[in-house]
Image (cartoon, rainbow, N blue to C red; front, side):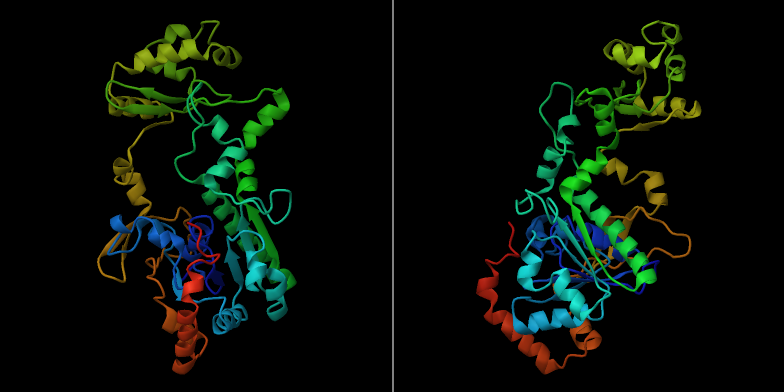
Length: 404
């Protein structure tokens, strides 16, 4: 594949979401991503098989395009040997195992850099490679909870709510992709690889940016505001005669557009500090005005006045939006089992490289290409490697690769 990362080879040992998503982004950008899976496959292959594509899980396909799939059992001699052979000709080893697992597999950075001093190891974990929580298991929802994200999500007075998309997993994966590209750039100058260490909790704390700053400066603990903003008002979602609409910063223009311009000079609303203090009163006035027209009509009026606004789309509406389609954010990829799969696109657009994507590979789809062509293994050696995997299959089914 062409792209700004063309020529970089990444060995992706990760599974589920926190890991596969970031490796997919790197693959979209041209890296040669080899997804190394145990014979049992990435655990996400078993999630949603019944509503996938020809037996391929929708969950797995969402995070694994632009990759090749190679089946290797790293706990067999030949499987580990094949992995080491790939390490010697690769740039990055990427994983999201708990701390200690890579050491157990003999795939940690200190081990790998002895055979390839230029190798970059990237590990995504729940809490990082050090600290009191290092060995504790974690998932997306745990990171969202512990970081404070869930405490500011939802309606005021409501129960804590997890963000819809798994941003704990996704953010860590994106930060890891940033870390790897930075390490690749640094290696061009130093000739040395390095370890990239990213955690779900760290990533979520990083996303809390202005909420943390607000707390540090004011001493006030922020809480949930629904679709509202901590320090800007009016801002957020409003119900209309038909549908919902959201608005961004727009005072006092919004009062004129809604036909309630008399409130502009109201002492309760004239200054931002007062509007925030009287948020509920102003919100009620704006909500009553929005109910006079339908969301689509309001959208046209607001855009004509250059007020930031948008409809609250359901998923089926979002994927049909003309701007979304224009930006190639819905992909139609030919699947190796036949037919097409539709997937969310990559938001990174580069001027020098056309967008190219590989469809999500089936389990072991590229075994022959990687073992036979890239590594030059004989048919006899490949057969022996597979025999070792079969002999180890029972133990593997209850191994560290199984997480759910």
